[in-house]
Amino acid sequence: MNDQTIDMKDYGYKGGALSDEGHIPARITAVHRDRFEAVCEHGIISARTKTGAYRDYSEDYPTAGDFVELEYNPIGDSLITATMPRRSFFSRRDPTPGRGEQAVAANFDYVFIMQSLNHDLNPKRLERYLTLSWQSGAIPVILLTKADISDNYEAAAAELSRAAAGAEIIPISSKTGFGLDRVREYVSNGRTVVFAGSSGVGKSTLVNALAGEEIMNVNGIRENDSKGHHTTTHRQLIRLENGGMIIDTPGMRELGMWDISKGIGETFEDVEGYTRMCRFSDCRHESEPGCAVRAAIERGELSEGRWESYKQLKAEAEIPDREELLRRKRQWSKDVALCNKNRRKQSKRFGGKDNY
Ligand SMILES: Nc1nc2c(ncn2[C@@H]2O[C@H](COP(=O)(O)OP(=O)(O)OP(=O)(O)O)[C@@H](O)[C@H]2O)c(=O)[nH]1
Ligand SMILES: [Mg+2]
Image 1 (cartoon, rainbow, N blue to C red):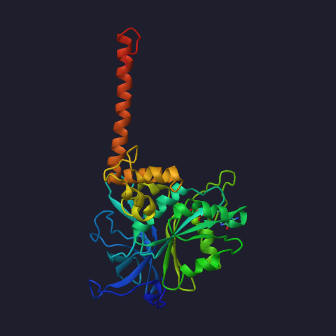
Image 2: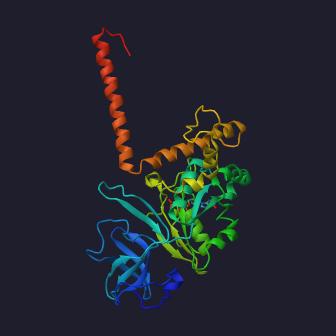
């Protein structure tokens, strides 16, 4: 607890009516289970939600980057009474059964989608991140990390440019400082950037490089398979001296859990352009005459891989409920197992001959 005075505008707070005169605004800087670290006019404080203020783990439950209303307590935990409307956020289905959507980061202007030039480049994953980023309400920027150990980062950037669909790609190295000037233009005064990417791509190392000091813990990765150890364990909002803010996250493995229904259009604008040019409006893009998608694939303008990613994401998005998707998958395996069992039974009955 400290008694310094902080101007909340420095943390991106834009004002707004509070529901009670005694409340003050705060911004969540870290979430530790049911306790929160937040910054308010009195400095960094510890807080928890006020009993009854939230339904259990509802989507408005506070997360890193949220602006909240607070009953300030100078000698103990302050109480969070409400989450202010978010201008952007990531959410995912809470892995615990019975719980709904859960916000995982809020109120950011840019998403840095980070992939390492060291074995981690993956256009499919990039498309998924891009879709989620557009859906969040913020602007995605792609950072290709560890350029210092890449033979040819320019070729890698060119390879990803189709999947990037117009988002800027910046090769960087946190070790040498290469590319960081451009990155600093995004992490500027009053702006918030969220870092997203697999464990070990160098998210926390970039926080430290931009801050000029060791704020976040960084750990060695198993260089043989380039997998990280999940060094960062919780989401954390950091304010740099220049006034820019970063939400560092642990590698998000649960990416597939997020709702991807919106944002596909932005990521696959080119693909949707072709689908609209087909002769038949209900074209299935298989062997129909006048199919613009097939023609684009044949001309080499659209890769089969990109078309497959689009179809896959689109199919997932059509099942809005992730549990429903899993239920269908489980049902499908059960059906297959039952079918095989019946088949074996029949085969026995007919003297070992398989009649199917
Ligand atoms: N050569 C090189 N290594 C880097 C660079 N940036 C990060 N690393 C190394 O990559 C490893 C992982 O870095 P972290 O910053 O902990 O990765 P992270 O993305 O925060 O990982 P999680 O917290 O687990 O999600 C460390 O050994 C870093 O030293 C870089 O620009 N060049
Ligand atoms: Mg980290």
